[in-house]
Amino acid sequence: MAPVLSVRGLSVRFLLPGGRRVAAVSDASFDVAPGECLALIGESGCGKSVLASALLGLLPANARTAGHAHLGDLDLLTADEPTLARTVRGRRVGLVPQSPAAHLTPVRTIRSHIEETVARLTGTRGRAARRQAAERAAQRVEFPLDHLDRHPHELSGGLAQRAATALALIGDAPLLLADEPTTGLDRDLVDRTVDELRRHVDDGHALLMITHDLAAAERIADRVAVMYAGRIVELTGAPAFFGAPGPRHPYSRGLLEALPERSFTPVPGLPPELGSLPDGCAFAPRCDRATGLCATLPPFRDSVACHHPAPAGPPETAPTPEDIRA
Ligand SMILES: Nc1ncnc2c1ncn2[C@@H]1O[C@H](COP(=O)(O)OP(=O)(O)OP(=O)(O)O)[C@@H](O)[C@H]1O
Ligand code: NI
Image (cartoon, rainbow, N blue to C red; front, top):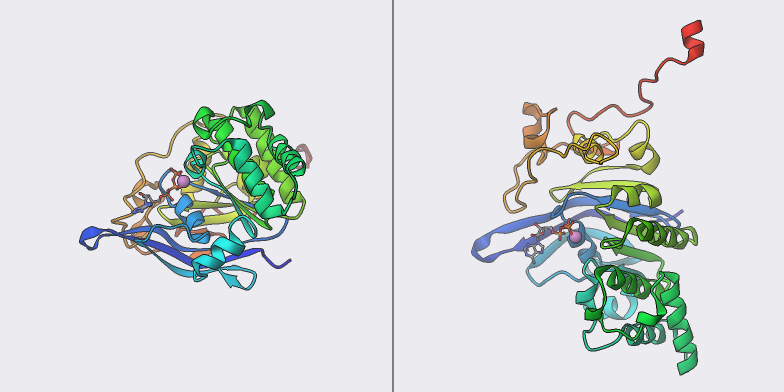
């Protein structure tokens, strides 16, 4: 099936005073198909939100982009602001922003936000019909109806997050970008939100889900992209990533091993400054597999950008009782 979104060689640089440049995203390429969820994971500051903002034309004025991001015939990176505002945001691409409160108007209630979005994106006419549609949108993400008349600052982080998710689903856009949609939610509500997003995917929508939460990613994703220091270092099927044979990039392996239910040991060290990245593999200083070769940039090959990836394909299987008897 043709992808909904096709990103090729996307890079974002921030130009800072004094000629400094921050390489927030470097050469990212991926597709998202209808009925597919791609989870984008990686440590704080690795460029995930910047990537999402680039796709919606929401970067600040000091940002420069390169590459392509095709949504059908439209290249999101070169589309003009009126096109993005009128036809893309909300209609062709829904966004659950990372800091939802910042995207809501402080003086308006959640009900007024949702009703306005319903009117604008679905053309629902009449007060009663709008009110009903707004309440349905809230119920879909388990936003309590008795909180609809509150203002954004009167909501907990988790409720603001759910309001933002309700707003993002209203336009029924073929592509949804969800930037940490489960932050601030209890585990149970994380699961329910993720399951609602999964139903949205199973209805044929494409979802790029940005998350720190590997358990949420495992629950929802068909494929996983791992970002490190602005680069996608691994992109692979979720079953292979979370199950066998497991991730191939040493950083991805480290992220999984850091989970409490695994060995609970964090990746040692800190990610590099995006303003002064090395020429070679940015992960090498933290990597126990690094060699002299890692001073050169590893090409992305067979799902991974690493000079010393773990083997692909079936893991060494333990002998079965049959083998032992034979
Ligand atoms: N306007 C800007 N000018 C300069 N640097 C910026 C700007 N906006 C973001 N950055 C830098 O880009 C990098 C990537 O930020 P981004 O918000 O995409 O990270 P993230 O992966 O989404 O992290 P988190 O998981 O914490 O949300 C950071 O180093 C950040 O400091
Ligand atoms: Ni972010």
